Length: 451
Image (cartoon, rainbow, N blue to C red; front, side, top):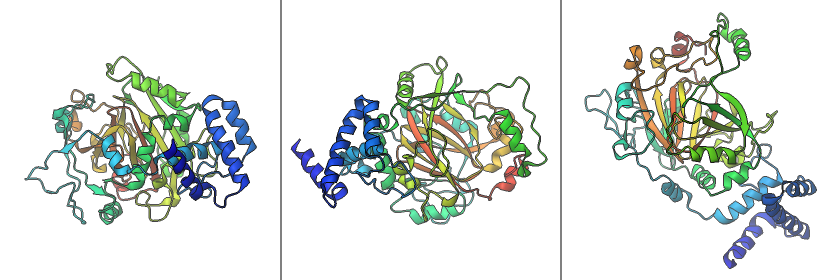
């Protein structure tokens, strides 16, 4: 159209053709052909990529010099997307994507702390965040129920919600005290959300490459490590004194396989509305290592797509950028839950599409959560499903808080905080880690886990 041609001319003048040269025009022409051939012929794009290898036809906004995807293929995809979408008001678009509203249940007036989660003070309230008995939470909204209904618009949320543009200093204060919180209205996060929800974008981005996928016939996904790896971990100095003693006849709770993103989407969408007990669950995953020696199939474009997770100084989401351990994205289907567990390092989590429900518990609740011991392949993960019918004994005394993360929401989760995750729909979540916090190390050690 005339508008597209005009926009293209302006964009090229700023991003591609400065200074204008015959060579640059030729490269642009070739790359445009590559974009078209890429849809229809993998061989064609491979030939064109080889012909103009190491050529930069488009500078990815905020790209790092030695980290990220420098391929021609990625440049072409981003060029044509950015050409059309640069002027979209991302924060407003995110509001259109998130149409479901979850309101917090009021904190009881007789509680030891009373605060508005949307207007939290600079100094965190004593005993923050407020928690409720686990039975109150799972009775009010059973974990196996993922459907959005009017009576489910209220949740037991004790975590503060900070606006990135207005509450940055408050968020840094809570982070310095190793307390969890939620960030909303980050413009860079919003840009990624809009891009990843654009029809066909992820399909183009991931192409036909197969990626790691774990399959389970249970709705609760259980993490595990190979017994031999578990033995090696327990042999190091940090875990001296512990021995490996896996149960007899133990079998991996999930099956490892690889599949393409498009194949996963077909399966995930076909599960909508089905009985959760009559189909398998597929947990699709991609990762970018951020430099160094990466695993085969690593998706380094994650460092270009999620610029807010780049290892830069003074990054709210990374306490120790130099200790970042890649970016990892996991794609959930309706009804899939992740067993309650803790991680040994600081975790920052963003939902880029769909929604996920999180149940959170302070490290002091460790002894009440029924964890597999350190010598088990699924160590530090809860052995039971958190449903009303299976909670007994000390479990009934556990205190938790919950939150529903929707596209654009970022959760900062300090080391050793417990979290159980439920996919409420087809969704995408990415996370990164940045160093080990020691605030709750003693509590976790007393629970039987070295830190």
